Length: 110
Image 1 (spheres, rainbow, N blue to C red):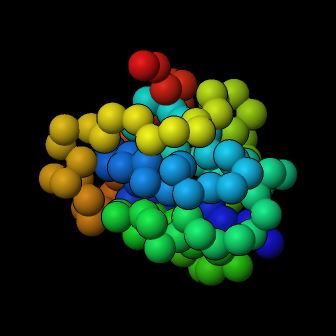
Image 2: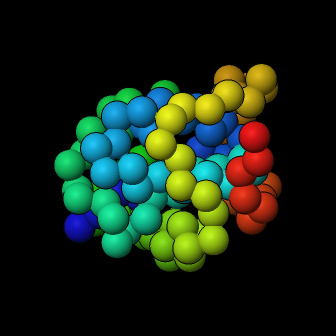
Image 3: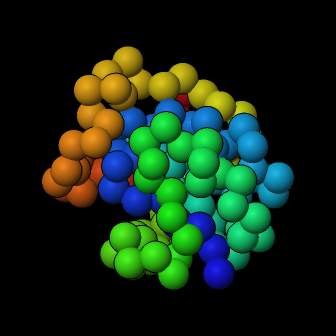
């Protein structure tokens, strides 16, 4: 089992989860984070740290559409080991539905 980042992370990208991950399995895009399922050790420490409540175990039905997206994007995005800058409008996007089309496949840039 692994954990999966889901739709509510899009445009929020708080990154609190990155700071607590003991194996550095988070990868960052322009407006979204993903977890590399090959690196995740299923410890679960990231889930309660996510202010957007966007992280779920892959066994949870809310993660089913997102497991493959996480695995695919982790292959091409840079690894994140420290919390970066949260988007200034993150709170405005937190909890909004229908953000999947807003997912940028561009990698994170400092």
